[in-house]
Amino acid sequence: MKVLLVEDERYLAEAVAQILKKNNYDVDIAPDGEEGLVAAESGVYDVILLDIMLPRKDGIAVLKELRVGGVSTPVIMLTALGEIEDRVKGLDSGADDYLPKPFKTEELMARMRAVLRRRGDLLPDGALSFGDIEYDPNTLVLSCGNRSFDLTNKEGNLLEFLMANKGQTLSSDSIIEKVWGWDSEAEDNHVQVYISFLRKKLTGLRSRVRIKTIRNVGYTLIGEADHELC
Image (tube, rainbow, N blue to C red; front, side):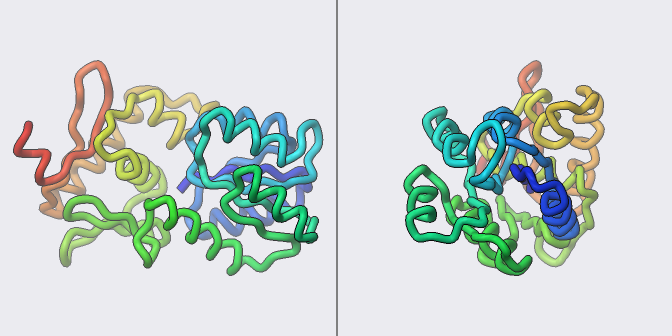
């Protein structure tokens, strides 16, 4: 899962980022509202952690612009403001949840899992499911029946992106932006290599799920029912 953390307190941002990375989240940090808005508008993030008190543009303004612009990524507001009216203002602006500082790691992780479940990406235990496969982002384990493989972070991020967009064809550019980052120097051949890695593991699991290449367009994840149409 890819997380955008918009937080101007550097030490707090770095501490939260380390916690998320230990839980197998891929994290980008934006130090102010303007940078956070630009990053969030890319649409590559699964969750946005957004502080309210930010330089250049406050979190409420960022959130409103995102929602007006059609960005539906789940947003959890992080702020030292604890008054009821501040919470209501954030939620009314389109936030999915609200977590006042200071907060415990366990509560942050639980709230992130909750907003992802509400969006429909996660099973109750935090795993992702498609066709006959399940993938657990917490353990990086891909399984089919009683067979399983450990994935690397990049393989896991790629598979998550495909599973979250099942039925859609994803271009190499969108995959690079999502999995490697918008400022990455990764190219099409990097995508091809990791698609190949995942295909080999799906075959090794004897899964009926396949990654289909649409020539000159991109890649899409197909399940058992889709095979009959190919």
